[in-house]
Image (tube, rainbow over all chains, first blue to last red):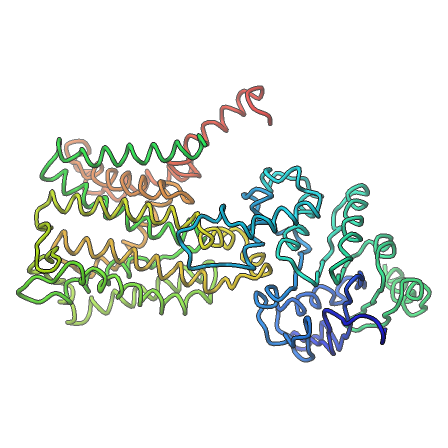
Length: 254
Length: 332
């Protein structure tokens, strides 16, 4: 790791407490361009909270977050997003009444907002239109760009969610369970998409589907009760007795 | 293209009817229509918040009333103020109050936002109601109507009902065109995104608070324009302009007309005012006309129950109903 490329995102001792509960405890990790770094763990392990803290959606209690060399610990979410941090949500958050294209175009508009230009129609914006088409192409949605987002299948909505992320031209992607609720075929397509995104992006993937995680990840971090118990290459994590205990222990309780 | 051309043609037809209306009407009808067009501007200003941005405010009358009071209080007691400075000054007062109230109330959401905007509007109401500033409960008179003059040359006399009618119509057309342009701009699309999913907009990189504050201030300013026109038209302002009844009435206009479309706000203002007039007609309703609020309220409840998208959504609702009845006609 020491001679690897410079990480695009660095988390150092990230901690988040809700009252007496420590949801995320002293988590450190690096996201490197060209890698999918998966964060796995049982329900309530603090994975989503961790993503929310990294994205700036909820404030950090202690620790630091560095994005593309900037210390962004105190930055607001929109500011981090404009610096190059994209995220997707566990629940689909597309704009259901807009077309697929307009969903992406609007997300892309964030890069060059021109909020005080009240006269020029947004539809004529060349910057956001090009970025949207580019993102749709990458996400494999170009053929259905003019469909209304709310009428898409679940799998397509999840793809659109990723496309909206890409439209903002991020360097770092935080993906919160992109495979949730997907069938096997849709899962395959999404994994292919994620593998293709490695080039040019550093990706943090939170996912429950273990098969999928081991198929695409370059590195895996395991969280239990807010703390990291293992962080290594997939084969090493699979063989780690502590990880096995954590997962099997959870199984025994039922 | 057809989809875009049709609303434009409909809008032009409505404007043509309104331009021609004084040829066949005068007196009460002219004054009534002037008042309704002012209400339509007021409703359009709230539509920017409720329909376009998804912010339901129950205190919008404050901005309507403040500009009206400002118009009276900033006019010299025994002379005419210049229309071209009085209008911006009055609108600026409303915009400033909206900026302050927005900065505070936009930290809340949903029903809390409704209550906080209501509270700030009531605050403004009681300032005019309980202090001598604007004549207390009696209200205050605008003794001399503002002069529409440039470089000492008097252009038109807004004291004449016909002139005022056309001035108000011009403002209505301007406000409508302005909002239509605004909503299609990057700013307007961002508001639509905030209405649909604010969380996603923040994740994409939009500082949504400032967008909402800009929309709130602009809506306050446009409500102020409507209030200013009321002061010029009636030459009299009282605290009831700021009361929550007015805030509620303008919200009902939007609900009745249909939210999410500018034409819905205009249609809602006209239908609301006509219904109000209709139910007060004692030749039809006899003694029940004294309880017109009851009849109006019942009608609005029925409208909301049967037309969830408002009057402007009726054609769409009808087509959807037809498609359900004849499944072959459209793909289901």
